Length: 163
Image 1 (tube, rainbow, N blue to C red):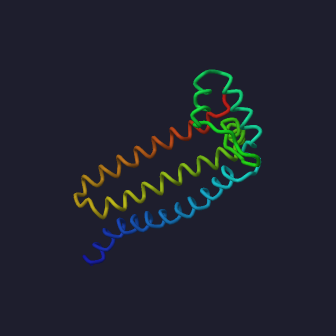
Image 2: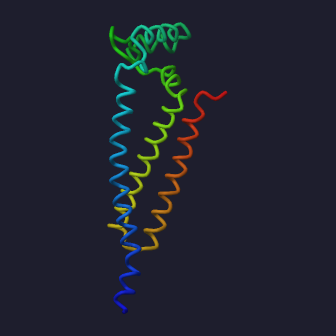
Image 3: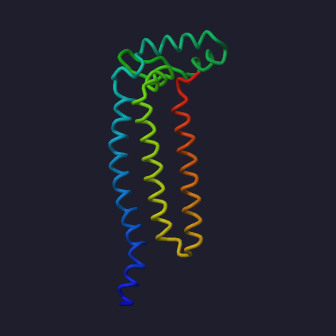
């Protein structure tokens, strides 16, 4: 009877560790999917990137605003886009983030990355920090920072397009 009680007492931590292991895999697959979507939207010519003409007109406009930009052009820090090249611009990012779907995609990428990272850190702390109290404090601090970063990132994404 006592061995059955011992198994019940240790089953919760084992189940919790198994859940963490499973969530690490789920968030990893989610990250692959959302990163693929992110790279496709951000780096492939699909209407969410500025054309070379749009980008070069922005640069010309900036060049006429002051000496700082003229100096940057002279030093080669700012260069015109080549014909056929597509460029990420602030206005195109704003345009994309006007749609709730793209906001949700960016927020999901943020949550998946933070969750996946903290699950990995928790696992590493479990392997290398043998003092249970210190390990629990470190994990709690990590999750607290992750929640704060998730909140800050969500507010930044959601505030785009608000007056």
